[in-house]
Length: 276
Length: 293
Image 1 (cartoon, rainbow over the protein chains, first blue to last red):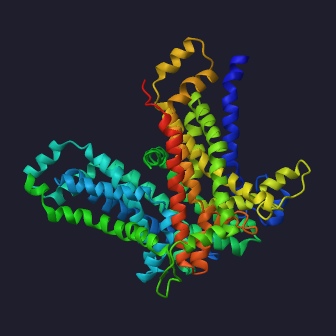
Image 2: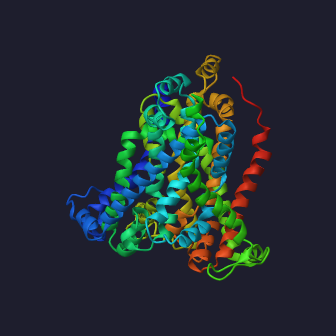
Image 3: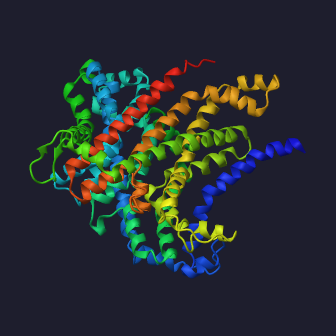
């Protein structure tokens, strides 16, 4: 059956690739349920028959994964929401209000941000945050996260807002709506699909951010998951089962979001990627 | 109409929050970077202008030269090894009908995860005694290898992890471009008797050259920025073997307080990225004529 074989080869190669992507996850989940390093070493591939769910309780309660988790969750969410709102406001002004030349200038100005490699600003941002006396507070992450999201968010949302037909707002203005009302009641609701995409991109970016989180905070109670996990690993290096539960905690929320919204995430990230 | 949409106060109010944060955390740091890079500064005492001394010092430091070399290795590995694989897998996925969505979803997964968690996860896979990799090699009687602790293997181990994380993202970019191509061209060629491989090389790949170009540019930019994965997996070790420019910068500025010197490294990262992308544009991207179908 050469025809069937021909059809089968791509699948064979792709399945091999998918296994290479997925197996590390399976390995971590299995290991997280095992009793000890000994148990992992004896049976590295296999299913954990004596499941040790205590590992999860221990990591959450005793090893403070819960602290990192909530820090990450609230910081990522508030920063992403704020970023989307201020970007939407700016996008509204530059696409729908009638200040053509200033708007063009502002768009160009924001575009510069897409060209600056984030890491190159790291030290200057560190010093800035230090001089603002917000080092070692969550503001030290919140403000750079929101600011960092501005260029791409504004450009994506503005592109979407440009497509809204002008008649709608003309009618609204005739009915006596102010520009703030126009923004809040007409344009913003129509832009929701773009806002959701931008929110997810920002949220994931914040949730995963490491460099700033690692150097702008050194109080353990303030740490976010990516940096908390590194400290956690260093403390529990001898206990790999425990470490794997930590990995599971930091990966699962992202995978759940991804499972529900993967189409939007891929769409948004590829749109951003092509532009960047 | 005009009264409402031409109100400068409202305009300002709408634009101000985004612009203020952007100026404070982007534009201002960019300007200070270019200032402090030319000074000798410990972050506390007044900065002393010292011209190009920092840059001369950097290039005299073997560790920094090694870090540049490692950034180049990252670039070469992404462009010469990953990009062909990315195109290959994107072509494969575009060619299948069944399970296409499944492949799309799973392949992309690693790129939404935190680099630091991926570093930890792979650190465990490389663990000498109970890690997945050595256990696997053990099946063939290979002695445990200390992947991240030995000079010969540490860099390769980091590169593999980096590839595992990012390949799926680029595969999806290329796949999106392939799926957007008009189907008629491929079908016509198939009727003319071109095999799948011929069609891939003679039709699809030439048509998606713009997106391949984007992928290469993003890979170069990414390779210049690379730092999290190195900090988490090896912290530049063993003995500076895996140090990259950004990790060198971080350790000199934050950990030893040489802020002037650190920011000059930041300028170098910025310039290298700029020169490389410009060079690439000049040498390769401009040659492409506009593609029409």
